[in-house]
Amino acid sequence: MIEKTAEVKIKPGLQARQAALFVQEANRYTSDLYVKREQRQVNAKSIMGVMSLAIAQGSTVTLVADGGDEQQAVDALAAFVHGEHQ
Image 1 (tube, rainbow, N blue to C red):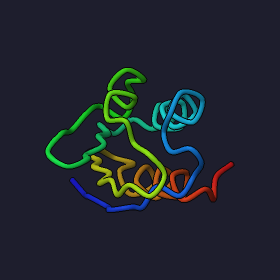
Image 2: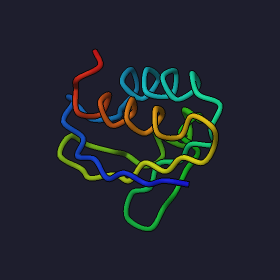
Image 3: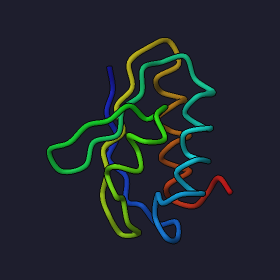
Image 4: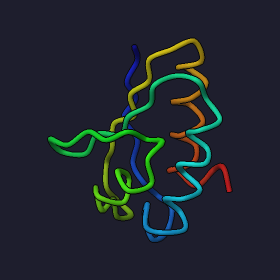
């Protein structure tokens, strides 16, 4: 299991459309993926879970992965929230 902290730089954060694209990216990987914000952790492959965190631009999140492609998954999701994957 690995964790990576990332600042959300995409506008307007992980709201609606961006959250859907984030979940779509997460579903490309077989690892179990989670997003942590403050004391809450949700499944990164769940649109309702990701949206429930209300992640705004400038927020810091921790990406957690456990599985065979965990490193690629956290790197890709970190790149996405940094705005490098659009």
